[in-house]
Image (tube, rainbow, N blue to C red; front, side, top):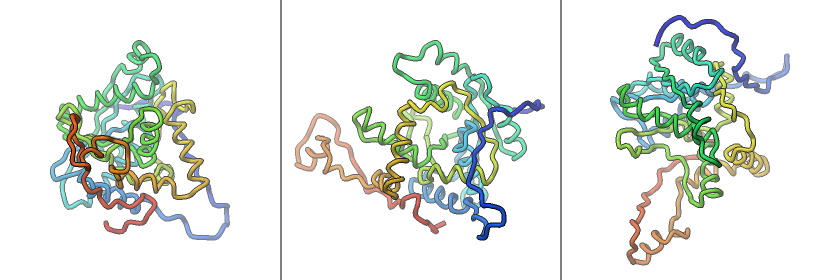
Length: 307
């Protein structure tokens, strides 16, 4: 897309505040987070084979802090990687009034990113058809994912990169157990049911608070999604986020331990009959799930100098 972007009042920009040192205070300036976060993303790419030679990756760009960090870190690695792959920034405009696509478009043009902005009527569809008991966030996510799945092949992309970070994985893990009665989370790589698309999550080893600091360090023009449910603390995911924050505040390291647990599954110590029956040498009508040896994945808080 191209064309003149009119200047308008950027009232929807999210201002991320960081603690600042007092004037005249001693101590060295804080180190840039670029290299440590890039190492973490590189480790995830190697552990789960997220990117391969010749990939053309659709980077879902919502305008939020996570998508900016993901695109910037992937582009940093792309310039130094021993393999060749392409990035395409794609924004799905849900149609909410006040969503600043002009801010995103100007950023893509200034930085030289290939991009595409897809206009949709998702906001209207949600208002007209949202099922009882559903939420804006869950339905909007499903509809946006459907648009991305459709757009990726049309734009020549074989993978879709989403900006979900380590905290998102843990929040999903708790939500699945508390509300759905199952143990699952967001995998770092997922083959979509349509058989055409592969979803990757390069930030799976990166914590949200690190992204907040990194975004403030770089100065990305973060924008609000303009959804009427934005900032609603009654949402289940927001409740899980607050719960994890309280637990981490009282017991430092809990989140890192939970993340390691996702790659250290002891299926024989759970209540799933499919695993236990297989261990006993019996057969069951349901298919037996195979659990391979988990990769050696350090917690995002640990230092990784392998890249």
